[in-house]
Length: 294
Image 1: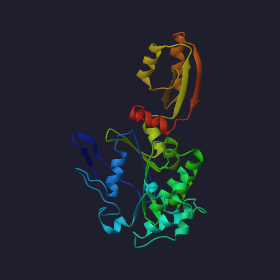
Image 2: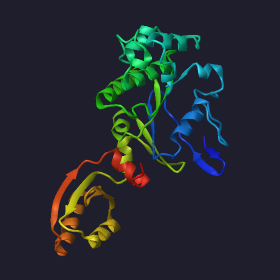
Image 3: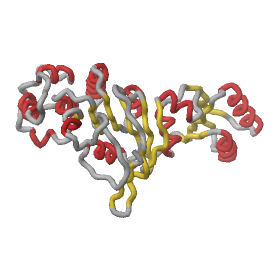
Image 4: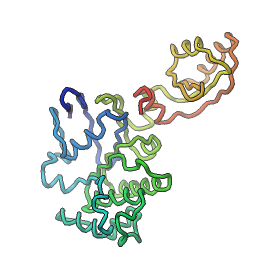
């Protein structure tokens, strides 16, 4: 790939390369402005790029056959809010030479019973599910979902995740962007972490933890500020500052590193308010790779 993209003097993509395997959920995560949406739009064929090359299903996205095999979740179904759910899907189905039965599409996104409801009267979660329905009405092999769970309440998010699980079971390849680390960790086969237009890390959530040197996370808090000890810990560990004076350090050898931690705090006469050991998650990896940017 080696994709480059600039907007004027601003370089948005700086040589991005990756491959997506058939049937996997491949997720792009990174701070705002890291290039996630730009990559998606380039792959969808709706945005140009300065240099590089890529293929989808072995062909260029401009190929009619490829266009028939990719699905993009629209983000503006509200502009067609005067239509009923079934009418909206029927309208989009006219764009393709082959489509699925609409009742099958509606069932797969958990909108059964909403067929005659006006789009404007759907909840936020139901509108996101309808966006996915539009993307899969023609039974594509690849589905692009750009931050589909943004703004959803927990129940709506779970319904969305269930629909994505159904797509995966059907063998579809899903390209996803999200700011929700739980979503990325739960759904993804592989995750690409971006920052400043550069691919910082790529792999399964489990592999990313290992690559970042994270087998365990030690959370702690001192009774008083001890900047000197924090500086010493930073020399040995990846350290994350939490809220209200709490900190986390990451380790691949929790027994040895815990002994070291207790030894230096004891020698300095530092009082520990709380101390606990946890299994790290994708959010911890994200923090290390991006410096904690949102």
